[in-house]
Image (cartoon, rainbow over all chains, first blue to last red; front, side, top):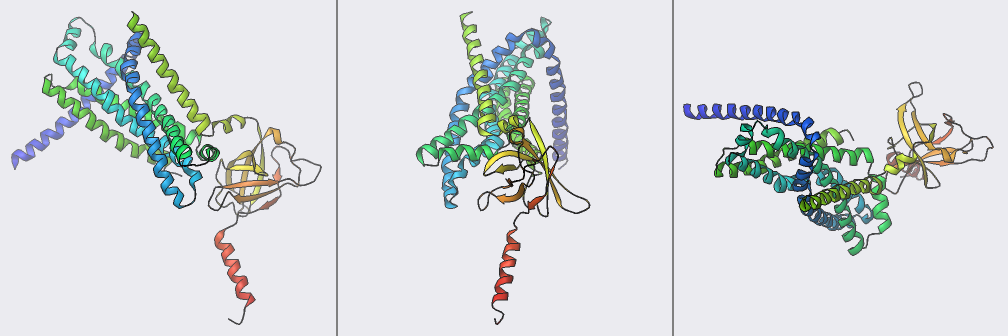
Length: 260
Length: 158
């Protein structure tokens, strides 16, 4: 019984210690922004591995999510004789929720896990301590470019996901099921507001990009430098990112759309 | 060196395509262009006994064509009427003074909007003027109530 309490207490303390280390790590990452601006090449290299390599999975997933929304939405809406509202349904659910959330989950799986594994392996093979020996700050040199690449890539990927999804919904709704093309676009345009919907969706995706990249980089930097430690850190990245994304999504949605 | 330049091109393409996607979302999917034309507007005021389900940014139209949007709705503290401030596009600055405003619903369950019906007076409404002739929103419950009432009056025997 006593050992149980003891381990519970130790666990809690370790969790908070980790959160504290994570916060300091985040500050340290931000402090590298100045030197990053002097070397944009580092950022472009990371934008390639974080953004361009994630591009394909985002586009394909967006297309299929949009097509499924078009199909399911049509089945429900045709019961009420309002197939014309299909565009509104597809676009609103994509722009407000599915775009940012699904993109962030895919991003955590595709880019986040890769970041953790890369940094963890660097730590395990002592490349990070090697940099410190050469008086190069590994956080500023390695972590900062990756953080800002993820931060910039996420909103772009989410916008891409939503756009492709809207086109996928049109493909199924207008192309296959015969919803009127004009009604699809005009009702969508009438119902969606630029500030309330598009800007809030972009804000969501920026927040998710920030959280996912931060978790991925910190788990990698903080992992136990063994092969098992790296694999555990990678798992934690995906699991913790998913929790944070879904939890934050609820809070952000309540803040943004709660008053309507 | 060759490899880096290919990488740069791909990153550039990625950023460009994503920004096109953002523009697509703003202009094609949402109503950003309505804000763009909203830059040059003048305001009209109308008082309604009941503004129904009108909201800020609801449409103001003539003959079904959107000519502006609602800026704000608040209560007149003296008369307890709803004061609706509308931003009308400058292009339509020749509305006669006896224009009337009514609250209509698009479709059976659609959004509510203000429909203006131009009158025939030679004087025109200027910035900040008030539209005097207004017709409130129809409330379904009141309509049903009136209908039942008149039915009951028709057959007093029952």
